[in-house]
Length: 365
Image (cartoon, rainbow, N blue to C red):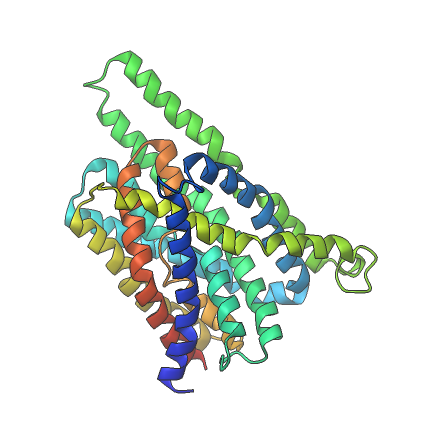
């Protein structure tokens, strides 16, 4: 398939994301205020506790079996690689640009954690439905592609709320320790309480029960036969979960657009820091990802499914995870700068993700 055709296939998913993101941004404007701050918080809770678990659980249950788990063992290793390589590049960026100390944890988080859940689901679902997709029959492509994306979301959430969360927590604690000599004891107690509260709030955020349930239903044949398929006695449960899960992608995309509004309200961040994060996420990480995945393919660590290889490569070429903003907010470290970084990285994703998706499809097809 020619490069122009692949570029066309890759661009439509990103255009769809941009249109829905722009709508979310419009709905968050002060004179519209349909997605104001309070509304976003409530909808975020609905997405986190209902829509996302339904989406992940139903896709994993339908397509993940014991045999496929054995085949997909490299994905957790690959995702961990994106986090470790990203944090290493983030550390180099901090040393080179010397940003304000309050931003160091934010920079590490933005370089380490990509949007491994919702964005791949949007992109893969759209690519599979697009005429001329290199991944074969649309329904089969969508079924397996959504399973790969769901697994990516589940694993990414674990690493985000363990690895990246602790990177940002340690950075925030270090800054507070340095400020102890200039702050009185009452201020110290207040800031310590902020970190403790953040830790308490964030601990359950992995929301792993639904993901584990999806794995169990998929890999245990007796349970799978009881719940999955049109002839299964409890298939109505799986159908209901799938229906709820379908609301996750458009809702999250609207909220993503609404959350970018803060970046348009005049908050500033060091220009070279923003440029550095963009270069890390859209140049260095994808190049390293190609080396990692192609090396794994050469060593026969990755099976020959082109769609699976595409997902592994795509995991290195995504904008920062939106939950980085949540962590920054709860620690009170770089929250306003985070909005600017998200605005620029997601705006440039329309170009970067399209180009990398095109190249990745050419590489695996």
